[in-house]
Length: 236
Image (cartoon, rainbow, N blue to C red):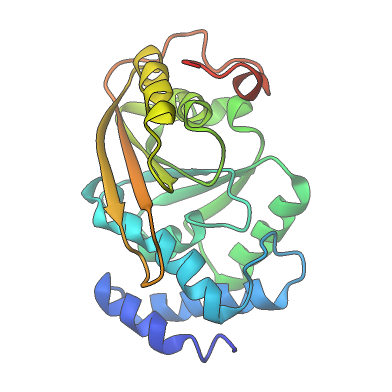
């Protein structure tokens, strides 16, 4: 299946999220590059699968008003570029930063941004803990299949402005994990405001967006040194 064959599904998503024809075409461009570039850091590259697994799963965040109205978005652990690239297409008025620490992935993302012509997207080739330029400046931070939730919370909290929002993509809910995340959130100045069950595509099961609000400033001891959050997660 080619990116052209995925256009009917892209057209559905275009109508669902009130996108323009040129935005649909840019999403199709993302699918073409994903399929055609062997450097793409994902096992899901065929347009038939990627239109749902990557594009639809990214755009589901548009169900949240805080995402639709964001002026600055940072996508942590951007990898193949989702949800960040899809949100950059859908939200041309937002500045989207794709935060990725591996240089080969950064090079791939730079090329995709140039090929598709996304003027509002830029790659930050750094670890989230070391991106001091982005601290306290992000309206929204996104993370999709990045790390255990307490780790994601620690990465995101210093980057969010006061009143900013973390949107963390998760699968099946596990109470033990959510309890650990709640302890970490309390320490980091975050508060869980919603766990939204979503169905971005027909076969998707147990998909949830965990939405955290930054209600107070994150303590100055965060972020900790690179790698510490994964080794000694807050709240665990």
